[in-house]
Amino acid sequence: MAQDTWRNWAGTETANPLRFATPRSVADLRALVCGAARQGQRVKAVGSGHSFTGVAVTDGILVSLDALTGIESVTLDEPAGALVTVLAGTRLHDLSEQLWHRGLAMINLGDIDVQSVAGALSTGTHGTGARFGGLATQVRALQVVLADGSVADCSPTENPELFEAARLGLGAVGIISKVTIQCVPNYVMHAVEKPESLDATLDRLDHDRATIDHFEFYWFPHTRRVLTKRNTRLPGDTPTSPLHPVRAYVDDELLSNVLFEGINRVASLAPSTIPKINRLSSRMLSAREFTDRSYRVFASERRVKFREMEYAVPTEALPDTLAAIDAWVEKSAFTVAFPVEVRFAAGDDVWLSTANGRDTAYIAVHQYHRRDHEPYFSAVEAIAREADGRPHWGKMHGRTAEDLRPVYPNFDEFLAVCDKYDPERMFDNAYLRTVLGR
Image 1 (cartoon, rainbow, N blue to C red):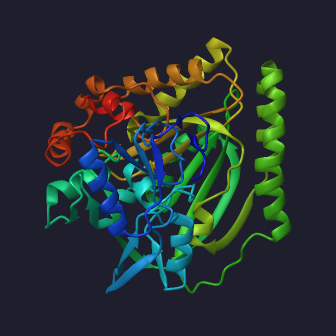
Image 2 (cartoon, rainbow, N blue to C red):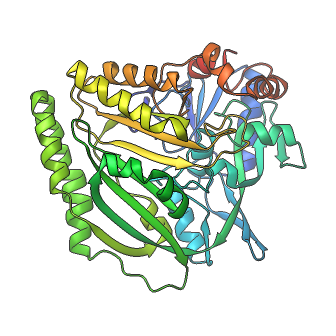
């Protein structure tokens, strides 16, 4: 991190910190925080920079966790799998590879795996599957470097309040240095992807959520067409049948990245062509079926730059919410080239989880980085708020502490832990002041 200016992946946030630091051990990180405390400096940790918000921005010391990587220990937890302690800067992709060769896997993953473990946890990363929670639900213990430089271990039985706040904590409580994750025996997944109608997909939604391990779909605005993805878990020794390399290259590189970039460039110059492009694109989709290692099925590479907002709504509110978004798009004449992604998660008890206390449907909307996202995102946010929606902490939104507090039952408990462990606001920044009101 030698550059003077830090930028996140999407280009939505920049920072000009007082200095950059890349500690090479937990002891180095502790010493850095101790020094900052003596000098009254603010500190923020950053992982891969894949968050769309300013959660990692600071004018103080920006700490990269890139040198704190790797699996530290594996403790067998038969028959469930194992408890795996990993350093916080480890990228999810690298962790999945290392786990696989130990006969293990993450319980669930999102569709992006470039994030660091700590960054993904701290912003509420989740995958899809009505029986599965987000990444924070897989955490069994944490090691956190606190604002006074002390190193605290926490779990449901040791410093439980710190554990509850830090396992999805926006970096407001301290800097996570190690994470202990519940892993399971490795498994492969049978993937079935095919184009369908939106109406038929919604009609059988309850069935697919109940019977498919990991179900999601992508709706193409200006159409009634979707791409569905049904991924089923199979034992790890199941023979795999991955996509042929040529088919994988054509689908996932040429079409999903190269051609999609070109389409969006054209659409930026002529937005009126987007409805026709979407209708054509959705009709050109072809079905595909394959079996591969779980983490290879979960994640996909996305190199087309975009802005993203995602809202979590109660599952039963999904059809009406999508209908309202569709009505706004058609009424406003605003054109949308990116599909709307819909995923699912089980309710959980994590304090700041978007799925806290309720089974959840996630609606993610995107806009190409060369186009104005504001009218679209504002409209979707207003619609989602009517459904008691909660915004993804790592994606763009316009919410503040005043209107977030009522939708999170443990909001004030979280703030109390922040006040206890960081009374001088060492880990504060503008984003946290907005969403937490501290």
